Length: 234
Image (cartoon, rainbow, N blue to C red; front, top):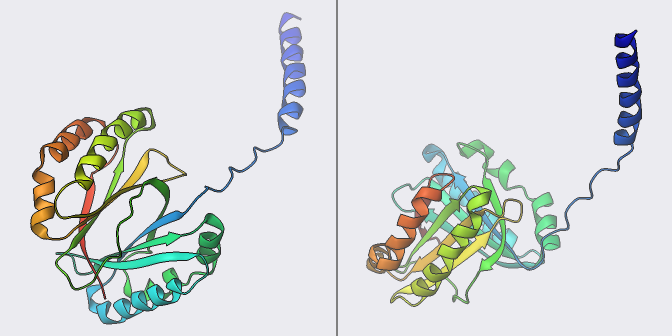
């Protein structure tokens, strides 16, 4: 009898709770991010198909630059790894970027000549300066670095960023030193650097503030500090 009462009570409890849970409305989707959208697209092509793939990338750049809401789109080629590229796009707002993303044929156009689908990272502005337009054919170098930490360490990372950004922008040879943040994973950032020469980039890496940043960042990193250097393409 005692076991029967326990079983009956448990059944009644489950019957009362499950319908209530089933009737709970799903959570509303988060609102789209506000402000300009900064997009970084990593592309890795097959060297055997490089001519066709580069042509497709340039065509994508040209077509995207004519779309409504496109603020800028730059194409870079990695130094030392000629089959790797990055596309840096800026859109005036999320709706214009979303319309572009839904209609984009980049992945389809690159499929035959690439090792993997394009890796697209969308961001909002975290610390974006007023750099002038990049110029192809000069001696400038550009770096894109993915940085992430576990969510509980995000505040520590942001505390490290502020002095790094301020001091780096004041260095000789600095073209830009910007930070963009993932709205979906706010503990993920992309650091975008521009330097007028290889010597300026190397001097920055050896500076006291850059070395201090890397030293303090190392123990809290959530993934590899993925730093890649590029040249702007014509």
